[in-house]
Image (tube, rainbow over all chains, first blue to last red; front, side, top):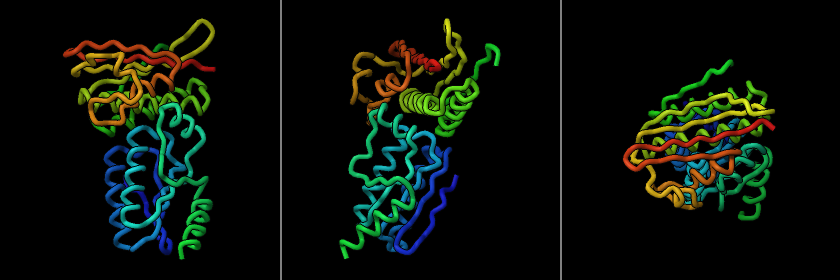
Length: 120
Length: 134
C-alpha cells in the first residue's frame, strides 16, 4: 500500500492509512528520507489520523523515521494520534520520546512555522 | 455469530494486519466500545508479531465468549516455535531475546482483562487473552 507524500513548500506531508503492514512502514521509512534529500525539505509531517492501531513496530518505525530525518537536519512532527490509540500506546508502554507531536495537521504546520521563525 | 470462531493463519506481516482487522470487526460486532476495540486490535497485533519473530508462523483464533453476565472476546495465539524457557522473565517489562522492544507480553497483559500463557521449550507457545465488555 502506497503512502501518499505531499510536498508543500519546504514541508513534506505523509498521510498514513489504517492498514499499513510492516513492509509498508519499512518502505515508507526509506522513501521519506529519500524525498527529504531530493526536495531539500526542512520538515516532515506524518499524519497518522487514519491509523487505528499503533503497535510496538509502528511506533519504533516512526521514531526511527524522525531520528533519520533529524540527522538530515530536518524536523519531524507526528500529528493526529487518536485518543484511543494514545491510550493503547500508554498501556503497551510505548513512547515517542524525542519526537515532536501535534494535535492535527493544522497544529503541526503552526508548530513548524513557529520553529522556523525563531531559527531564521 | 453463534459459537463461531475466526481463525487467521499468521505467516507474514500482511497476516498481522488481517488478524487485527478481524479482531476489531468482531469487537465492534459484539458492541465493544471503540476504545476497547482498539485495545483488542493492538493486543492481537503484538501477539501476532511475537509469533512471527520467534516462531515464524502460527495461528490466531478469535472467539466470542459468554460469561455469567457479560460477553467477551477470547484471543488464542498459538505456535509450534521454540517456546519460552523462562516465562516469568518474558513477562517482565523490558525483556526481549529477539532484539525487539521487549514490551510484547507485559504490554499485552495490560491491554486485556485476562492473560494466560503456556509454553514448552521446543514445542511451542499458547497465549490466551480475554477482554470483557464493560
